[in-house]
Length: 107
Image 1: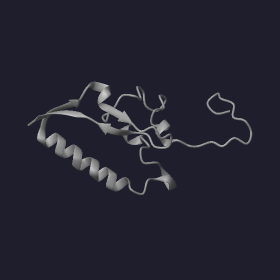
Image 2 (image 1 turned 90 degrees about the vertical axis):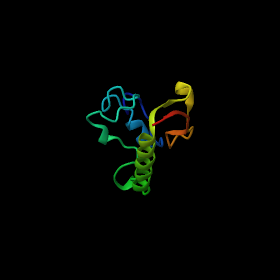
Image 3 (image 1 turned 45 degrees about the vertical axis):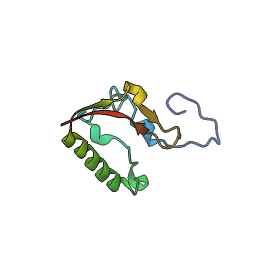
Image 4 (image 1 turned 180 degrees about the vertical axis):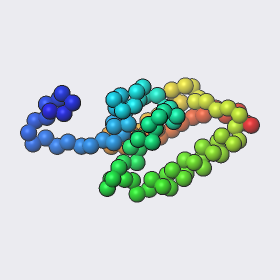
């Protein structure tokens, strides 16, 4: 039994780190992006332990570069069309956006 759900003997289970990032016991209001939450560093976006993504350092560096450039060159930005401005990966292993459309107001 996992989380109250019976698992039949012989079943194959798959660990999904992305699901852990949405655990309301760990992250209250888990669906809201809040980089200032007290335990923001506890997310598992790049896996953990022996399953840590080998490309995590370059991905983090790319994110710092893009977000830094965006914040330095714009006065304001917002999602174009609200939630419709984002499309999400449909892969059940990897979770995240594959398209984000922004409206930018230059600095």
